[in-house]
Amino acid sequence: MPSRGSQQGPAGVTVTFAGSGDAFGSGGRLQACIHMEPNGPVEPAPVLLDCGATSLPALRGCGLDPGPVAAVFVSHLHGDHFGGLPFLILDAQFAGRTAPLAVVGPPGTGQRLTEAMECMFPGSSRVRRRFAVEVTELRPGGSAAVAGVRAQAFRASHPSGAPALILRLTLGGRVIAYTGDTAWTSAIAAAAAGADLLIAEAYYWDKAVPHHLRHADLVAHRDELTARRTVLTHMSADMLGHREQACHQPAHDGLVLEL
Image 1: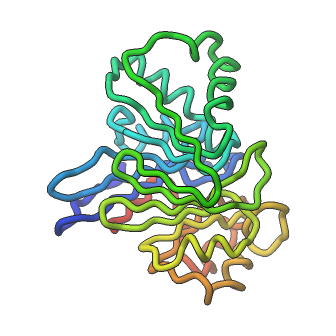
Image 2: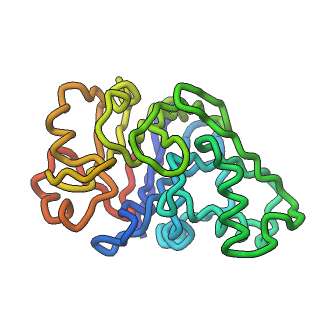
């Protein structure tokens, strides 16, 4: 279980990579699930950045209670980034949650969430709960303020049945940019401009895989990326084999950053 130090000063964010893996569990890693907890005199509730199908065991394995999570920001509607939502909602229902749960994702998120819940647990999307699931659909170029977080969306290059998003989140006085899954696009540099942290996919070392970022892409565009810190995630077995040579810090399940 990782230790979770306290942030000194009036603001800050604790970022925990509960799940840092790709869709297929490469390296034994769990799917995308990044827990972000603002710190300060008045502490908003924590939020998640993506919620892959393995998110509940990922959170609990890090000693993080899913109950207080106020919002989930979803980059795109593939199962390893979105598929944990039905489990998160049902777990909250059985735990007696009463506070609303916000879900912020690309256009089509509401319908896809209903379909996923009905596919895996028939009838679960229609059951009466003691809490609301409030879906906000965010188009590329749009922004929203949810659960104390300002989210800006940029268009990713990653077909997923709906527009995929590169996200720029402002919370706890910090800015965190997240590529999600995407081929290189200048929108990555725009989203990461001056950010405190860029969380970047590095799926392969240098092999070109359609609609995904390679480590080689990040090297080629390094001068365009002005975030103060970059951490690599969503790594295949190929990339994990090169992680000691990486130009940025690779994430691992349980990695905790204090911003």
